[in-house]
Length: 243
Image 1 (cartoon, rainbow, N blue to C red):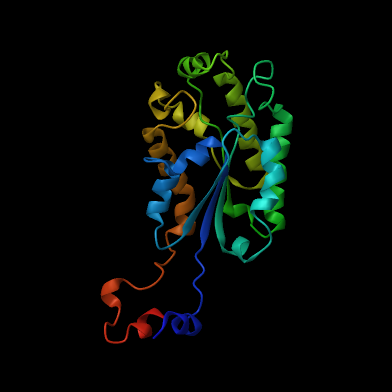
Image 2: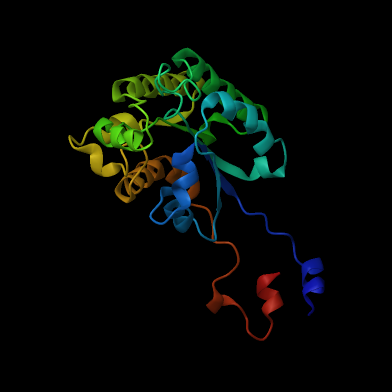
């Protein structure tokens, strides 16, 4: 059977999908050892993991682009989970990094706005997971800033205020939340979770995947593998197995 004929006979396979929406911590998540790549590996042949991370973005910009990334469509219907992972840039110090800084109250309002938008395109709150920014290891991040000729432009205590706001938004909106800022600091030396004081190391990515999977497992673990295992394909009549 020709490929075109097979396509006409078979029903188009539409993969479920998980959308990862965030800043550089999300954009870099498909690098070697990254948390997005690890999640995709767990879900291979069951679900697409879509990276929609934008380095340097804050929630002020994210809420503008979200409708361009996800609209009311069959793709939204197939979306089984969305992570919203912002705050590392919003919490930049206003006097040192005004371009990325977003005031705390606006940050919370922006997160709320994004959740409401997703619900408006029929992605229910039980499919939305907010993730707080991770803690900041100030001495390591200061070295990164100084190497670029800048002053330290973030503080861990300030990041913690944004993490708490994220948790409150999740509570108020009825979504799930992964409080990475608090969870990582249960380890007295959380620096090994970070590659440069701000972004996740391989160990930090592994920690995030483990925590995130506890939120996703109940929704995704029952997804079937798409298309049969190769040993189950009839070699004499593969169309009977594959179409």
